[in-house]
Length: 149
Image (cartoon, rainbow, N blue to C red; front, side, top):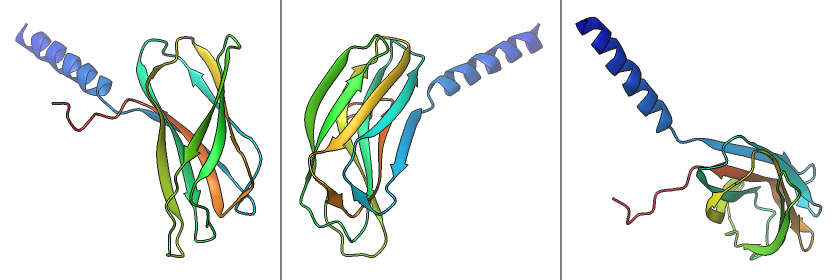
């Protein structure tokens, strides 16, 4: 009996620990010539219609990037074909190093993707941007705020 209780307690602890793992989905698209000027579409297959998530835009860039910021249009299409589009500005810091850098920009915090199925995210720069080598979207668990305890 004692052994059975021990096995049950260990199994429950494993379930609790596995639920606490941070889960992220990152989709990236590479630019062949380090020039970004066209729409990039990302598909996220949502299986959880209750949890809150953060949506972030990820940008990899090199020393060829010289702009102060990049204005983009973000279009989201839900599985039931609901469409939302809005402007967003990526304030990408310049670098002096030769090696590429990666920046993650929080786009939306604590979003609930209320339908199961494929969500499509389209990110389009307003103008052609040089020095961008990859663009992506990250869907993940909300980041803990620094004042949370």
